[in-house]
Length: 392
Ligand SMILES: *Cc1c(COP(=O)(O)O)cnc(C)c1O
Image (cartoon, rainbow, N blue to C red; front, top):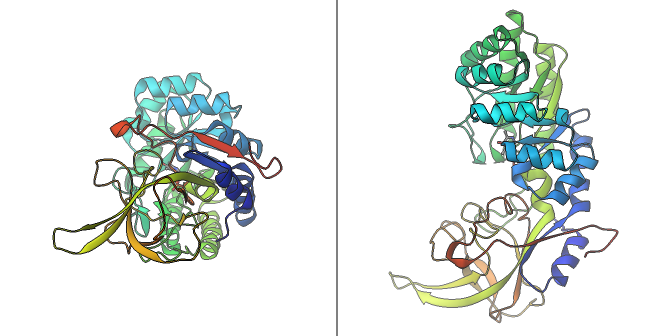
């Protein structure tokens, strides 16, 4: 895919390590999501990029927020997102968390157990609850299946408990897994949702919402051979549109919510790092292997680098001989490297310590997952740019 000129210009202008976000690109991605899924309400999953400028730009487009904690709720409120557009989407929350969210004006809560829904009834009386269904997580880079969501049978019990405790059983929610690569996973989720909506209607509970969660993919990652991953996005959107109709057929008039994180920000953020060293060593089995050590890695901006491969750009080093190298970050942790099974990356043989390297499509889960300075490598600063201004 073609990266935005604005982003490339900002990367070229950076003379130190940083993350650059292109706000115009994020706005364009938001608009294309609404064009694909007309009428759907968007609640940006703040954890994917808790940067005030990004939050502000999405809020101005009309986006709400999927918050995972009282702290994220606070950040969203400070950015001017109205409380009715903020969803407490974490099924894991203490009594004080629930009470504080309620005090801050939050009325939408995700839940997946009798214990949690009982606590919501006590500390957020009259609130609306969304029961999260478990999905299998198949086809996703991060399944999110084991820790969250309940069975359809549990969901009936949880929503009945909600109703009996004076809460509003407002909706069902799912998450098909982050960086979901298959349309089939969406289809399976919708079959489950439609089935359950039908059951609930039979029991006198007509819900108002289905929250489809996150999971929509970034487009710019590479596969284990270094080729574009190329997720079947058009097909996914077609399956989602069909699935929404299926749910309406089963459950009556419903409104839909999506909670994209990665999809909105990944491709419109990039890390400007530099080369620490290109070196050649022999493995324990005697095989020669080049390593490209970058100044940024798993603990300072590229948290997911051991699970996926980013496209690297070596500015000003076009043509000339190249060597296959394993890419790794600067720390003493062996997880701070590209995944073991991946083919080495072609690196210009002439590259030198200090040369800039751009790590493309690295805008999701970058800022939120940086350590305070593992091995002394502190968190990266960030810069936000827009098309009209041409950078700052
Ligand atoms: C993480 C998360 C999201 C965002 O997931 P992406 O895969 O980044 O789109 C949305 N909703 C909930 C409840 C989450 O936990």
